[in-house]
Length: 77
Image (tube, rainbow, N blue to C red; front, side, top):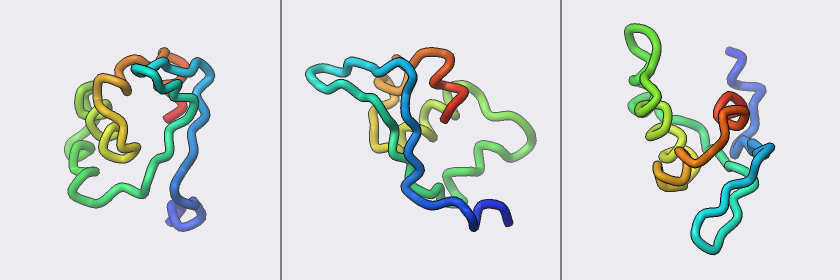
């Protein structure tokens, strides 16, 4: 199991920080996902909305803040 070598929270530094209200988000801290959250991958690829919601759940950020990230940062998470 490759996941056993990962440490949590996973910190993903954004190449392009996002201004969210008065907060500048420069990184996402992702907690370890639960099985029920990872069901979006059943049967193939997850939709962009599914991935946005999953990243929001794992990071504690609102989905609308996750959507503000640039393309290069979407791939990094």
